[in-house]
Every structure is written in structure tokens, then in C-alpha cells.
Length: 319
Ligand code: RIB
Ligand code: CA
Image 1 (cartoon, rainbow, N blue to C red):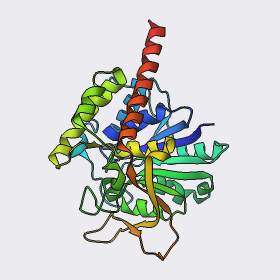
Image 2: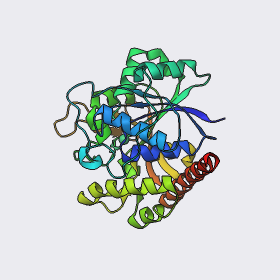
Image 3: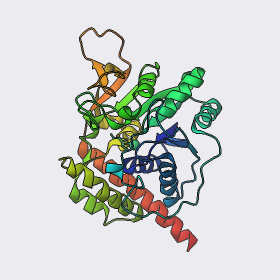
Image 4: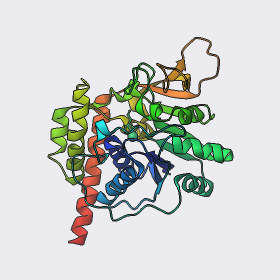
């Protein structure tokens, strides 16, 4: 039986790839819904991008708009990395889908309450929606199996020396989620920077079917900022949080107590782990620390190829 999931995202090049990775595994993952949050770009652009990705592969999955910005302060976008549209690069056709009327929090609440089994949340963006949900409806925590998120980093950040973007944008929300008691699997920079795709692999993608080509073109754009920041290869951050759900054996991890700094001048938005032999509190997070990069890339390529075949078959039927 596939595990029911809700993806909370801010597409975002790597969010788009993570959504496609999930769509390629209907036997393991049933995407009950997708929610959007201000992050890489403003909410309307993020939501439009999510709808365009779904429309590109004919995936009619309900999408609900969430918080436009963090619990406190103004939204800091990731425009430098993701561009003016939030997903610059290929121009995707206008989506044939529209968002649902409901807001993301009520939408998630309804999906979780209606589910026969506990739901897994897959946040790939600032954690504002998740924090609002569990604060407004704490009882819903009993029907959340776990949270597989992209965010944070124990060794370093990417917005500041200590804070990773998704946590940096809304540290208060992140602290609420990390201290919620819900089991967390954290794909932080410790692992996502190791899940990097290289230029020759992007070129290979662009020789394949329409979905693979689209992803290759997204990565051409997304690589620009990485190169500018001195990285070799393009870290596939958000796809790690989905890949763990379908192939956890690709990853190494440590169980640690992790919380979020919200005050520090230098450390606001830092995910802080207690690595002492006798930590103050019981571990609450499975921190992914390593990945078999070759196997991860094969998983990505095979997944995109599945979507290519599905799209070609559907086109064949319609011709
Ligand atoms: O730091 C990486 C994270 O920030 C990813 O979720 C990416 O989409 C951006 O939102
Ligand atoms: Ca994201």
C-alpha cells in the first residue's frame, strides 16, 4: 500500500524535481495534496509554478495556497538562485489546473482527518504552513506519521554561515516543528550538498524524453547560482526528502536531538544538534548525513524516464 503524503513546497527548481520524483513512485507514495508557501519566490509565483509542473505531466493533484510569508518579519525570497519567476529556465506552458479554494492549513487538516492511516508530511520550504497547522490543531499530530523535510544543516548554512534557507526564512516556525514531538527525518545540507548532479549528467538528461529534458533545462538555470557560489555540481536539495521515503537504504543518518536557534545574532535560523554522549533531551530527528550519490542519480534518471514513458504513452493514446 502506498504511503499517503502531503508535499509542502516553494517551487523552486529542486521542489519541482522532488514533486516529479514523488509522482514517479505511485506504488510507494500517494500524494493526497500539495501546499505552497512563500519562499523561493512570492506565493502566487510559487503556486503558479507548482501548477505548471503538475500540468506538464498531467498530474491532477489538488494544490492549496498557504502562508505568503514567515510568522514574524518579512519574506526573504531565493530570487538569486531561482530567478524572477521562482523557476527560471524553461518556459512551461500555462497550467490547466487551478488551486483549490481552501487555504493550505485547512486543506491539510481535512486531508489528515479524512485519512484512514497517519499521513507523512514532506515540507520542502520554510515551515510556516506546518507550524500553523500543528499550532492551530495540535490534535492532528496524532495522525501525522512523520515529517521528511528538506532544511537545516549541522555543519554549515547557505544563507548565512550557520542558517540554511528554509529554516532561515522562518526560524520560529521551524522551532515549533522541530519541538513538536513529531518524528522528523532531516535532509539538511550535510546530505543534500552530497546529492549533486554534474554537468555531463545534465547533458545526458537533455538527450532523453520531454520530462527529462525539462528537468535538464531547469538544472541549467539552477546551476548558475551554484557555480557563482563556488560549488562544483548542483545540489538536489528537495529531492533528498522524497528519495528517503522510497529508498532510505541510499542514505546514512544519525539520530540526534536537534532544535532551532531563533535569537542569535550570528546563529538565527541555525539547526543545533546535541552530539554529546548524554544529550539533554532524547533524539527527535533522524539527520541524514550521507548518500550513495551514484544510486541517487540512477533513481532520479529512472524516475524521470518513467514519467517520460507515461507521457509518451498518453500522447500516443490521444493521437
Ligand atoms: O536551501 C535549499 C532549500 O532552499 C531548497 O528547499 C530550495 O528549494 C530552497 O527553497
Ligand atoms: Ca524548496
